[in-house]
Image (cartoon, rainbow, N blue to C red; front, side):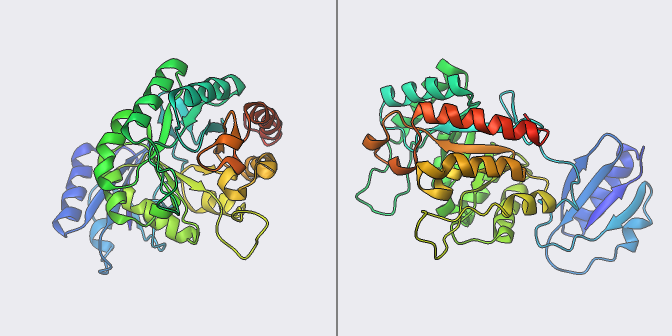
Length: 336
């Protein structure tokens, strides 16, 4: 349920309503707009007598939220959420391009890639210091030294950094070096990690699980939101289907569906969505046309030597061409 306060409701009236809600054992989430304050009432499934709140001073109305995801719903917040990353805004008019290698392999590899993607038009640098892999014998990432290299690349280029965090214990460490905590597809329903990311207050890029529904993705976001952390970006990265000619199946449908149901910004990862560099640009164009707020692209100076996901990584010159192509699509749909 949400409680909509009247325009001009005093701070005392808001505080009184909040006190009443908390006295009943529910959590309160405030959304303060320019004209009105909205009080989100979140808790268990006990029925609430809405009339007892509608009678309070300063209350305009109460509205039930029927979807299982409450705080992620547009019923709770009608306007789009914009996540600011050191001046880069995700969810506004501009489409943000996040690019870099799947994994940080060495200082020279990352710095070379970071300079190339910035020159081509990327506004955020991606790169994995910790890598969850299907095989325990595959390259697992450089760990903390990789985070230090990412921080050096940020200082050199000015690009905010997004990198993956794999466990609750890693959250403070990764947050110290990175601007965005990425929660990968395999960890989308790692509830301990979701709680820790929410408690950190740090920006989060939450990837959709490879076999997860849109509602399950939004419910995972709800865990983070429940801690008062609204700095969340959702990422569509393809789902597993019966198709064999691509690594995953990019769910373009998910972009307009999520944008209609939720106020959170949506980023598309066409690299994982296809698994083959030949298709990345085409799917990126489709994502921008469908309304995504950002793109997450894997770029490597020598994909044939990559220690992770070389088959889906673009060479820098191909990435530059992709940026030029999606810029035209963005302009055609009123974005930039």
